[in-house]
Image (cartoon, rainbow, N blue to C red; front, side):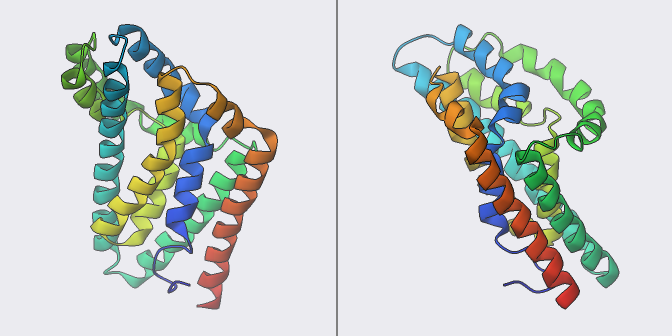
Length: 225
């Protein structure tokens, strides 16, 4: 369980599942980048390490964003009304993410539009690390690409915000980022089998209902508290 003002029920697992099975969206947002990375990366044994470095950089940015969101939530937590509001908002966003996995994706577009201004400032910095010849370029490139506007990432960040703690916020985004790792790492290494599994209708239905359930439990706890 959780207190009315703590993290929504089972948020770590929920965000891991969203990252793992939000494969269609992640492939759409980052698949082109990963594909370009594949073409530029030297083939052979080093390719795995380059893709791993890129993805660890990307996840590092998620963790930093989670830490900042958690700090912001911590500041808001001093005001009880705001703390309650953030918890309710995070539960509603878990429901929205569950609906996304079930195929209702419209809510992501306005969220992504909001991040475009920041991305326009970051994108030019990526050019200095291209073409990617090794880990030294892949890691900082991943750190920058982690700020690419993504509704799924922003949805996860609302849970980090509601955690009311920098440490918990970072941990939540680490769980989300680790969920995205298999899909994008395998996409980079041109292995499609996992992506087919992640995009399968039954897989998305089960995961969507599970995450939806976590959000509903959070709202139930809110009203019960």
